[in-house]
Length: 266
Image (cartoon, rainbow, N blue to C red):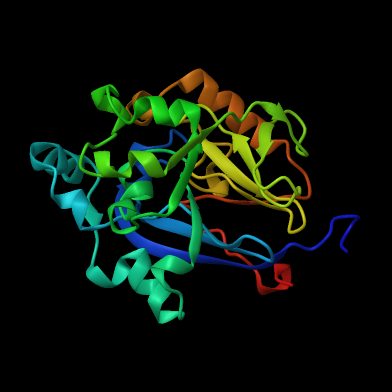
């Protein structure tokens, strides 16, 4: 028992599954010199006493290069590196974890660096916000939902959820995914339509996906092109302000340099 919360989470681990390269000066107004930065496509593995192994996002896969002109344009704007050994299943196997050991996959949103490995995870149930579910087909081009990332054969694996309930974090709506208070899905609207994060109360860890591209940049203002990439810039700003106000919570983003510390493990 920790702070009145029963320990349900036995382990948390992060994997880097490919990366893209960006120039920080072209992203943030406060950065005056060109500085290339690697943005890892981070994947989170949660191990739960009852529900087993839960994957949050799936990183890049070879499919990022297999969507014709769309892939070429994506790579031109967002230079991407992916190798076979970066695939999440390859890395899990090195840790003795098989595909069938994964009880469910939580998708924070539908960008290719978050859903690339889905096509290799047949029959595993997929949790996403109902808003994301709406965008699998018919998304606007700028939303970067590539049709080759989620096949029609996977639609029966998807479980859409409403993330609009009161949560343990002030000012954030959420959903108690497992019904035991151990894993909360949190509304992080702004960067992508229907984006969610994952909050683990007993560890005080908040995985915020792309709500911010690193906690070092919470106070920075986006330049024009990164602003245009956001699905809803005003919602993005509101979400960042709420994240900035959090106290006593370790924020971990998909692309930032935050480190999950061993001291946070059971």
